[in-house]
Image (cartoon, rainbow, N blue to C red; front, side):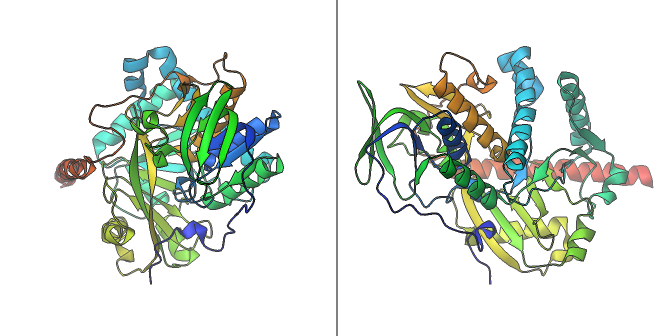
Length: 439
């Protein structure tokens, strides 16, 4: 029977702090995910008294609900970044994307965090021949800015990486990796606690009000007076706490399934490269072997608005069997959902509004970027007159139709189904052309 909770949570400890939060702190961090815990660790190591508050149980949000794919990158191409920000910032965005991967890997290795880190690489698969050509061109441009370990995989070599005939080649990011995200989160939590950070779950923040000597943070219990505040809530940002951020970060759901145990031999036969996989099509799927090597995890866009895992399950199983027809009758052990935080620029941001700092807007690329930008946001709080990241120059944008409640997302889901249809039509056309050439 399918369980509708994250597979990563199975058998993992749940941290609870039964003490009352203190009345004063140097810094209060709202949100106990990768961003908040990384920022809290940096602040505590600098000698600050830090309190982290989360509205849910610690580890409830996206940091433990994601696919555990540890990679560099964001959703903006070099060409688009150059158009909107200029060549210098576009180059820095690429360099810092690479730096985020190096930072989070080092964080894991330097502190011996037991999170099933696997240097498996990530293969981005081309849904059409045009996608393959575009990826090759983009890779050349990125390599010219700063060389990194990535190479094209032509169609005739794909069988070495995956047992499917669905794709027209791909781009292999050789330095990308995978983790068990709940264990990574717990590792960051333990580091923060050891540094003296006080972490409290089930402590929803009601309001953050500026005072002449700092901020008053209202919780369900008492108030906390703090010199500085960092909002690290991403896709779980509440308009009642920060309308400014809620108007600029959209909560977009993600949906994931994990198969029953298939056995290492079966998984190895289907994914001989052992990579994390992600597609170029609009309704992209992302999938990987689980750390034990006996199951396959797959995520996809079942909808752009919130639906239940039970409603998403049929769509996800259809995508799984589309990629791997041999798994048609495979049982699904877990299916769950969670919210990512999307910015309108498709880039994350570190900033400060009315004295309140924030780091968010990862657009589904937060496993490496969130710990990295949490650290950078903490440096900004410690040294506000200095620039610490190019993502200080990618401001969060707003739209008049988005006032914190994504009421329009069901209509957007319908629009994307049209784009899915067009994607499939282009693919069918490419397959027809290929067959004609081979006849």
